Length: 207
Image 1 (cartoon, one colour):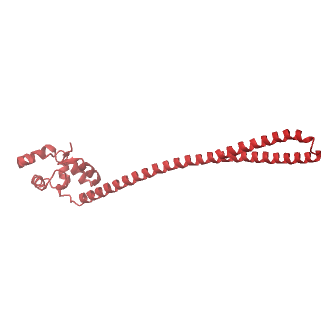
Image 2 (tube, helix red, strand yellow; image 1 turned 90 degrees about the vertical axis):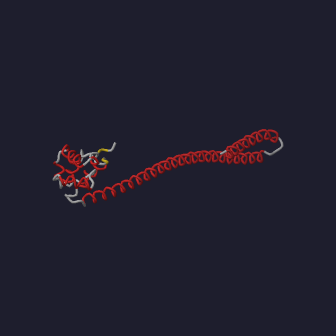
Image 3 (tube, rainbow, N blue to C red; image 1 turned 120 degrees about the horizontal axis):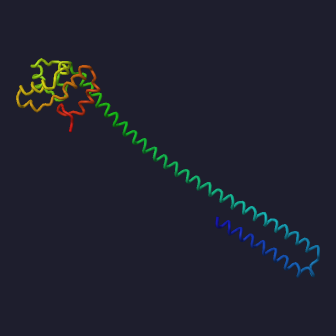
């Protein structure tokens, strides 16, 4: 834009100087130069002045167009920056969704494996209950508890008594959640049973 402003300034100065020279020297030459020649020279000077004025107007129009183009270019840069920022945010969001989806798929695979394993036990396998191992299952069988339905109906105090009678090593077992687990197993509610057992350790709630 600086060169265009300089050009317009020089053009305007030249035009002013030309007009001053013309009117100054015209008086001095009027006496010695024929009138026809003076008129011809005057017409040429006026034509030249008109051309210069037209060039000046064109230069000013070009300067305005250039300023408008520069504004449009700045607007385009601003728009591009906003779009790039939005695109970056969307890419981050997509990556987070992909990571979440991957975690969900892993969790579902684990859940599917757990449910398949749970469903594979028969109604007489009390070891499916969190906190019951082979020895405790034998103790319960010895007291007439063979199925999930039997265990679901058993009182917690009765279960504790069975464990105490079996010896001191079984007194540490906690049967508080066994009837609830057994009820879910007896009703085939594997999903609910899996949710419950994830919160337990050794048959009791995780601390």
